[in-house]
Picture (cartoon, rainbow, N blue to C red):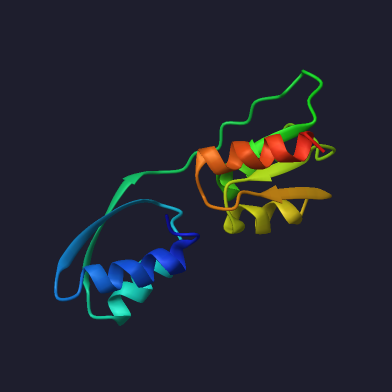
Length: 126
């Protein structure tokens, strides 16, 4: 598994040398992957498959932490909730956004649900 988009781009540039690829993405995608592949001469057909829409939900339960999978998830959460929780983030891009608002931010070792849950379990097992 790639730790971030830059590492994934490096891997794909090697695997896709002299090939064409299709990149399914959102309207808020980062430019890291397509820019790197274009720089390496790989033809990338981008297909925007969804638009990100915030859908804030007020959390009424007493909780200690919140799991975030994207910066837009943080935006949505903050519209109706406070930051006196621990932010558990799937990756560094999400963590950068979380650090703007949350005092305590934990980041998964690798960007996967399993690693995010491992981060949560490790934190609360202290």
